[in-house]
Image 1 (cartoon, rainbow, N blue to C red):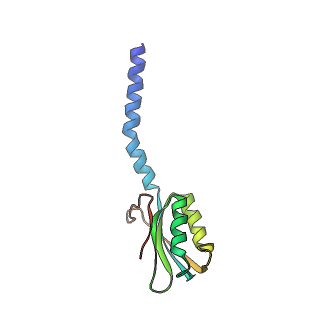
Image 2 (image 1 turned 120 degrees about the vertical axis):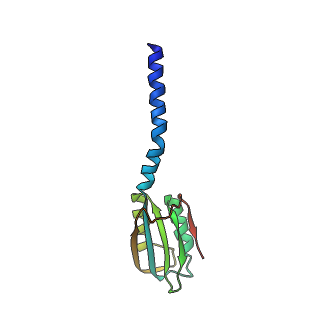
Length: 124
């Protein structure tokens, strides 16, 4: 009987191991990716630095850079709650010296999104 219980435990453990990759793939599929544009006084006020720090704090992937039109643009990627926190932060807070006049967000379809692996960077 002990042999059968050990065998059942081994089978359950093997099943759990084989299900793990599917679970990770399913979790990755639930990532949300948003493109953003933030307008106002967002260049020359450490906006990119603070955006990178906030995204990293929230565990998000993506990037931010200055655009030629004076805005800041980028992408954020992660699970729903941290993405929503970052969206609110980009709309209302930003860096201490910035002045945000607007923020636009566009959802990027999962099949079109780049996989950032939880890494956020400042681009030039």
